[in-house]
Length: 293
Image (cartoon, rainbow, N blue to C red; front, top):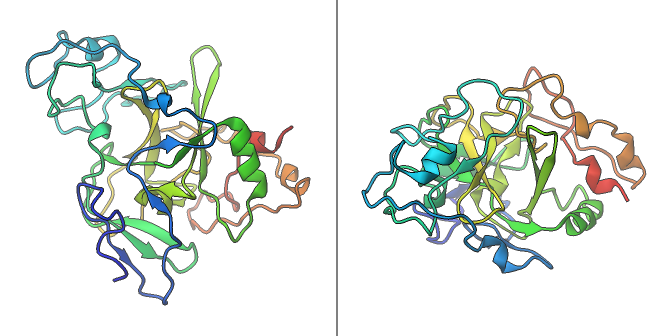
């Protein structure tokens, strides 16, 4: 046991760190439960933006709550995401009740904003550095944790991506939301210097988590990780580093991440993938747009 709680009491539950392989310890970083503003990003990005509901009862319900009526319902009675029960070609927005809403903090339309509540553990893997695993069974579409870090601009994201080395590691995630009119909204979050337990989650080409954009107060989405299937106790958690919103993989997924030759122009090589899944692509995804002029 390296530490009983890497969050130092900031999470609702302790997040222990163990290393059963050697004496290595995680490199220091600032622990934050939620995204913070990076260079040249105003803290106002997290200011209340959406109108709230006027529900005075404890539980917001369909046909009464304006938040749910406008976009949802989003969660079932167990707090599991329920709007993706059939394939979709675009990203359906998730809006939780916010600080402008009259409803209480126990409202069932407040899930991601409550933070992590599952028992998770950071551990040392044999071939992939550090990882994160669950100490309890997780049902499909249950909220697991938020990918938190610094919210940065496209210019800062390009700068950081081009400065990366194999030694520094890559904690930069670009979430792409594809709308029905073929527009793409990108959100850049880097957890290298500031983040939470999610920064230890490894990539997999067949992940058991899916990243879903969830909006609470801000127009900027929270990068929420939900279980893409039932996950067994002790199982390592993983998501697709491509940042592609894709609950159901398709032949077109990750199309923006082809053309590995772009890395050669910056004197870099793709990192090998050790996810060991049958659909493994051999190398870790990278965001090619971060290497463009």
